[in-house]
Image (cartoon, rainbow over all chains, first blue to last red; front, side, top):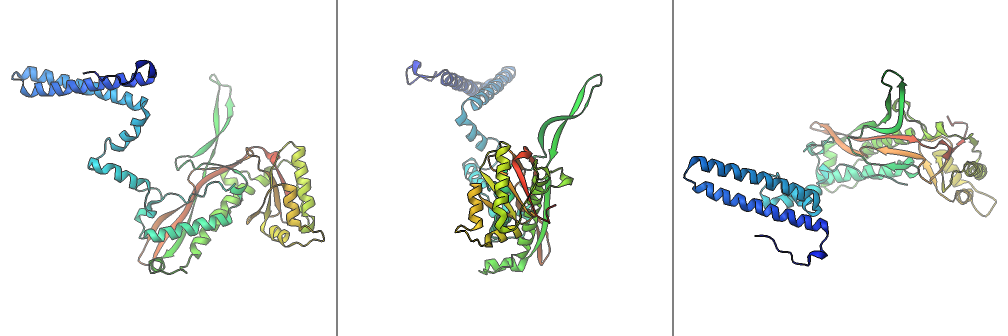
Length: 118
Length: 268
């Protein structure tokens, strides 16, 4: 189902409208992933099951491409993606671990921060 | 992840690291003079190996004409010093007079190296210092009471060369203290007179012999720092821990007209 606009379309910038389109497409890709996954799970013919799984994987590729487009064009998305993606800690602990990492213990400090004295 | 400093492998508490770092910072700020005078670019990180000089050299008119891009490599210093582990533990015990001399000695050495490179040069690192590149004839500094006159001439030289201010006087340690202590029959001490002429500051250098008047307008002298001063860890045994102070940097004079040397008998 499309995501409705909540304000008059004239009030939105072209950039924001593109982001909206990308988010809608991203939703549709994942919606298709859910459908293909469910149908593949119950398909009785092995050949049909393989086709459905193949199609599901294609949708995942499309969703990933859209997500990357959004990261590049929706600046607020970049930072949380860098925080959470491709980590191995429990997800709810990732942010805390990174916060601690940005304020390292004295033993790990890097510079005496002398810089310019002019 | 271990850094080039390898601090995480040292048998040193956070309390002791904080103490070591603060002693080093204090000593650097006390000793560094060039950074009070020249433009600072950086820190650009350990990855920076050279600065772009924006020119070609060895240009050949072969079948395919070619040239080599000119760069100036950074110099990386690493000065070791040793601290006693038992003495560092005394920090945790609450001691306030922990022996800091090894830190001070190494850090002073590091500061002197940078200041020497900036003021008088470091040939092996292709650094031409301000003294050797200054475009104007040197002016005799004279006795403390006459320093104001010498500084006045230097400022006149810079203004005549269209080098705007404000101006800074950098004095060697001996000359600085002599000026500071100089008495005068005039109501204003020579030190204050010199500051009025400069409309700027007087900076003491522990490595310079004589003095320099330089413009602080910016764009004339550039200290490029890759990794700024930091303390790292080398090794330890049951009694001692060996650390080092390191930095990477280079320096270049962009406009040699922006400095006038004030010479004494010991100026090289």
